[in-house]
Amino acid sequence: MTSDDEDLFLQEVADVVPLKREARAKRRVSGQPDRDSSLAHRRRAAVEGEARDRNILTEEGIEPLDPWYVMDFKRPGVQNGVFRKLKQGRYDMEARLDLHRMTTAVARRELFEFIEESHQLGLRCVILIHGKGESRAERERSSILKGCTDHWLRELDIVQAFHSAQARHGGTGAVYVLLKKSEEKKRENREKFLKGRVPYDST
Image 1 (cartoon, one colour):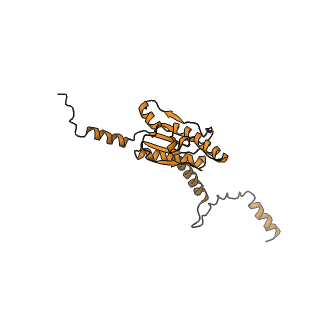
Image 2 (cartoon, rainbow, N blue to C red):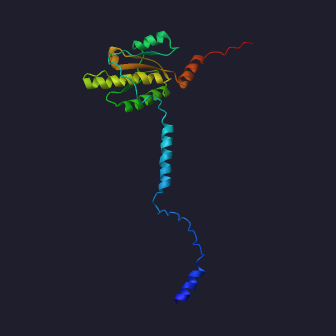
């Protein structure tokens, strides 16, 4: 091509605008997870995990209690005779949970699940062992767990009352817990009460 031909060609194409190239889609290699979908999956799993966690118990800011402090709590409506029987350890302890050597995070989860499951099974009276501690380090941990236990039990509506145990059951290192009757137990009691009774006919 001569210089004249080249000049003529450049003049002809001077007003030509290059075509805009569309962004090229990223091609995913077979078997390799897409990063965006993987991130979305992780976020969704985190949200669903939070939704599944029904544990309402306080996680931080709970004051420890002296290992020798007597825990004492009763909701309105609980009869004094029932509470007195609980304090005296005269109910059968149908289940127990030992919180010894647990971290507060583990104890929070275990206590919540234990109380909930006990209620679902229709248990009325259970015992929690939080300890008093013999060494200084054990005393500090026990006082923290004891403070948490006292605080957490008040947060659960199905807990009707609780009181530090008698010496034979661990003294102030343990606590008796009275649970609300489950709907299943209420139904069973109604059936027992009505069994053999003739319905009242007002006519």
